[in-house]
Amino acid sequence: MDDKFSSQVVVRNKLGIHGRRAGKIVQEAMKYSAEICIQYAQRRANAKSILEILMLAAAQGSSLILWAQGQDAYEAITSLTQLIQNTNEI
Image (tube, rainbow, N blue to C red):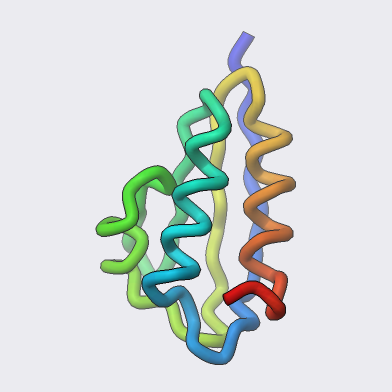
């Protein structure tokens, strides 16, 4: 059975979703078999693609919607939400 989950998260990092942070998001997303997307300002990115994430150009204060579908969708959404909200990450 494919579960579907979503979460809304605000980018707190003062640099927004920059290269290193996008890389960390991709690394985390790759741990899960679920299909994971990030939506921002009418654009949607595959969370397993650093280029697509960078093209969102999400700055500090941006509100993102994370979507996941698959067996481990809940775990993926929980983990990525925490990662994006964590201001201590590079």
